[in-house]
Every structure is written in C-alpha cells, then in structure tokens.
Image (cartoon, rainbow, N blue to C red; front, side, top):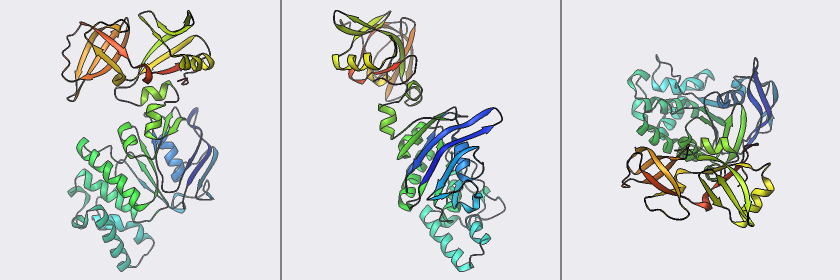
Length: 363
C-alpha cells in the first residue's frame, strides 16, 4: 500500500511563497486532484512530490518513507506532462521501453511488457510509428504508457489533457479514470479545469495563492463550499454574491439589501446570528437556484434583463437587481427581451451565507 503525506509543506521562490503550509494525506489507490487558477501553487506542489523541487519547510512521505532528500529516480514515481515530452527520434515502442532499457532489462522482458502496456492503452498498432505521425490523443497514450511501464508507486500528472481538443479531452477523461482504477495506482493530478477535477477525482484539493482552500469530494466542494473563494471558483456559471445586512424586525430575521429583503427560517437565522462576526454578510446562490418569471408575485425580486447567453440546453440570463449583476440558468425556450423587467425567486433552501469579514461560510 502506497500513500502520500505532505506535512506543513512550504516552498519559496525569492519573496514569493509558492506553496504555503500545505498538509495533505493521500490514501493508497486514491485519485486526488490539485485544482486552482494559474500561479496557485498546484504544479509546484506536484514537483515537490516528484523531487524536482526541494521543500524549504516540511516533509514529504511516500508510503512510510521520508523522501525529502531522495532524487526523483529513487522515489518510484512516474510523471506525465502537459507537453507529453516524447523523444521525437524514437518509435512508440522505444519511447515506452526507454526506462526499462536504462535498467538493462532483458530484451524479451521489455518486449513482453511493452506489448502488455500497449494492449491496455489500445496502441498496439502504433508501436513502429514515431511521435510526429501520431495524433494528440495517441501521443498522450504513449506518454501514459511510458509512465505505466515503470510500475510506479505513484502517478503524478500535470495537466496531461490540456493540449487535446474538447471532444477528445472528454473521451480521455473517462479512459484515464478507468485506467487508474484498473491499475490501482495512487494518483496526484493537476488541472485548472474544474470539470476535469470534478468528473475524475476521488477528492479535490482547491488551491489559491499557495494555500489549500478546501479538500473534499466533488459534491462537498460544490454543495458546501468552505468560503467565498471556493464558492466563486466552482460552478459554471459561478455562484452569485450579493452584500446584505442582517436585521431583526418584529422577531423575524431578514437578509436585507436596498432592493429586497429575504426572511430567514428560525433555525437558519439562529445559525447565522451565532456565527456571523458582524451584521454585514454575503448572500450566495447558484444560477440554477434562481427562478426567472414574467409574473409578479409578492415575494419576488424585481430585476432587469441585462444580457442573454443561449447555450443550447439552457439560457444564461444576466440580470440587474438594482446595481448588482447576477446570473440565472433558465429554460432554453424562455422568451425574454433585453432591458425588460422580470421577477426572481431565490430558492431559500439552496442559499449560502458567508461572513463578509472572514469570507468563511456560515451556511
């Protein structure tokens, strides 16, 4: 069994703290994705695990072994890069077999193992070709084969699908996830693509500015974001946010905005009043949890249509509530006109509430 443990890991590049006190336990056979925007520290974290960078603070364990001072070749990890990094003058066979040849593995054993790996990846017919004669998806399979044949304890993958076209990327996501489960190899995957992360991962590590923002399953980070940053990063379109104040009137608790007020159920109100650091809070709700109607109702919020974004199976509606711009995901056949007035109903059982000062989730 091979797990990966990061203990209080930090890495500096001059004044920049690329990785900031990251602690994480990755279980044996688990598929964990480091997700975040460019410059958030995810690739540096991966390079620290690989041994391509040395931590300034903290420890890295692979299995039970402290590997801080081990070279990359002594960590028994295999890395798959965004660029594939294939040797252009070698055939597919020789690219896959390269690490075995370095170890002076007998030729018959090399041939057997290359054919086994090629069979798993469906590239048996490509073994005599060179990389320039392959498509992007085929090159990616060869890069995976080169990693697999080493029989590593851990796969490390740095945006391996980002150079593929959209259709092939979807196909490769499915194949890569199935392959990882079939092989049972602990995998750490880096991407900035939240769809990749959410469809492939057992757990997601959300990173920003070198720090871990939240660790959880796809469902956990989507339905229960730990803070405003996570809530705004996960989801497409992302969550809407509106600054509100907390007010109690005649024993009832309301979220109050200059253009509307929302009553809170007693149990929710008690939680919010207990956890909020002040009266200023942030209301969050996802576009799919905002109902757009043309009919005026007593508890509806008046808004104006600002822009329309048809996406085939749905209509993304940009709306102005006073001066606050929000997005709603509506039916594709909803007939709306720019600048027209509409009415909104926020699904109160789906709202999120954040403390404005700390940015942390209250509800």
